[in-house]
Amino acid sequence: MEGTEQTLSPATGAETLPRRTSAAQGQARRAVTAGGWFVAEDLNDADDNQVVGNDVVGNGSIRAQDSGIELEKSDHNVIDDNTIRGNADGLTDGIRCQSGDHNTGNNVTRPCR
Image: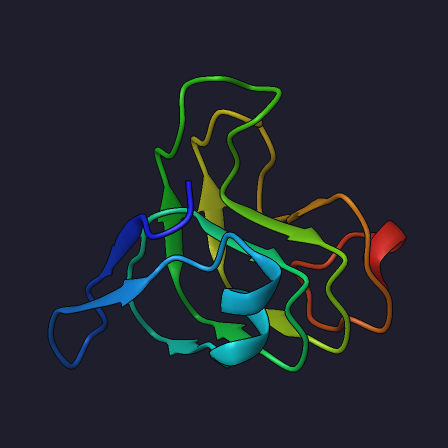
């Protein structure tokens, strides 16, 4: 779904950013989100991002494909102190890791560390 947008409403105001769903988008834009609320975050082939201190709740309807925060082929990201709950994947305060290495933060599950 390249070109799909996600809405972020950080504590400082509302902002709309392009959703990174392709390698080109993931590498072209470095995400830094902090202290807000946002719709599902997919980091596909995206490196060196920071996703910190957000509420990621109530995303998706299909457990096998929808999640709160998902990493695939993504390395060296910081994903920390996010509240992740009530998403279709059923995970609580942890990311869905498809693949990736050297990611840090208390939301990162072992396969992506």
